[in-house]
Length: 107
Image (cartoon, rainbow, N blue to C red; front, side, top):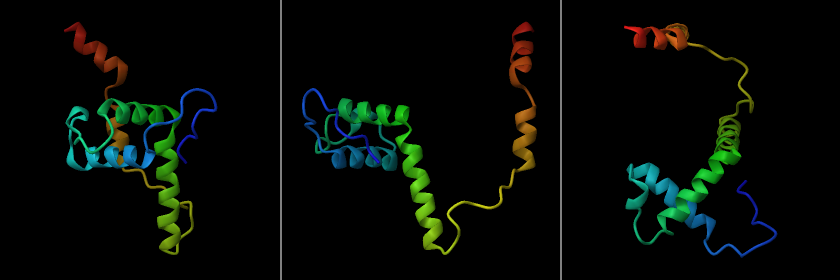
């Protein structure tokens, strides 16, 4: 699911498995990017790949595929057949908004 290397230009010097491990390590330990241990690729490289994959929607694709696999392993259909919306969430979405933000600045 990760993007293939670009057809032109320099070859990739970093192993994408190491980049993924660094991203997961950072998420698991709540570190700042600059605090990644030295055995991972440079933090700038890891952060660059992370931002690229966010823009390309790679994380959503991975999450969707994992959800499908977990549902199948549990003997359920890939796609959920029912959606439940919490009324508290809906009420919070209806309050405020743009008009409320403007009112706060007028005071």
